[in-house]
Length: 125
Image 1: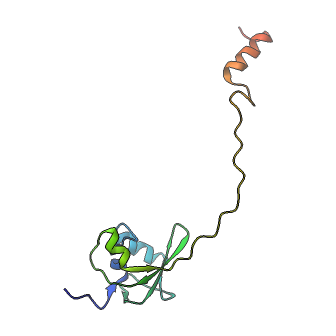
Image 2: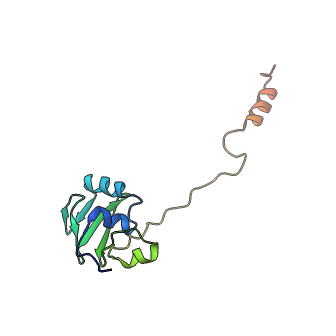
Image 3: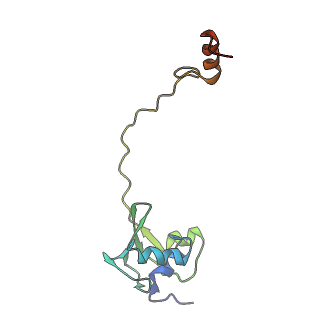
């Protein structure tokens, strides 16, 4: 079977497992979250080998170079061979001080301790 010369962008994104469903890929394209070679495209746009696809997922851009055209969804290993991931590594996280946890019983009194305090002050019935 010969490799096609071009494939719809929504089909390719679904086939290489960027999106779970083709309709999710189409919705992302309609929402403007997908760009090919820097241009916004429609779902029927034909992607070719060598194109650069930018996909915005969860607030981060993922940059994929098209190495192979796929029309059918494939497993994870063959899907990884179909694109070149050019996404830069995320910036290093700043050091964040660990959240301080208080010892059990420190701070506000528990319900049991409040009842004991009320008993000592003579407020219980």
